[in-house]
Length: 230
Image (cartoon, rainbow, N blue to C red; front, side):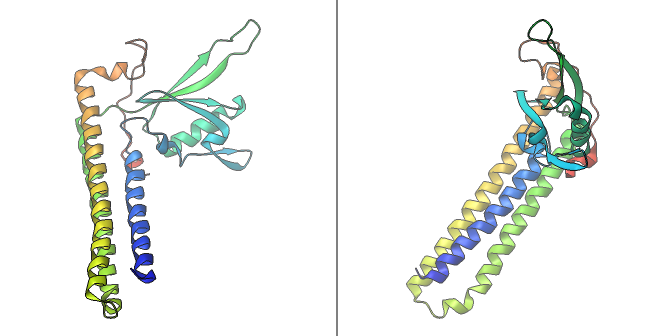
């Protein structure tokens, strides 16, 4: 296989990987479970400078549906709250205070964030939005593949029939693998949404943030529609 075709195969794979990564990123911000990726866009303003959340806080995931955010500097607590709210206003927030580990020590405040429950309306919204994102990703894959086929018409005239056949099979393999990944991500997200909805119906929402107890947390039913498109 000539160098030109090898380069085009690599270029196609990178483009399609990018579309799938964008699709995955957008879905992780449709928060059903506590996805660490959803916190990546969060920035915190401290003394007129912007920092990524992980630069100013330690983040833990006590269970599948919550984040525990510990400020590295207690003075930045409100800034951190503001930064997370700007990106994810739908998160349920609760202030927590840890008792000192030893006498004379200081209490430490942190913030527990829990994901909003998936009631019927939110399930429908999440499903529709996920399918829309999938449709856009699939369209990008199809258009890129079609454009490449048109681009290769002239180069194919300079290749043997065997080389053309090998090249077409290689391009099709990249496309098929990328499409399969896109479809699998859709299926996985829809299953996750349905899992969240069944949890809501079963009344498990009050137990979401309690790995050790069954009655530790009440989860808000408020969900900001706009946040789904961050």
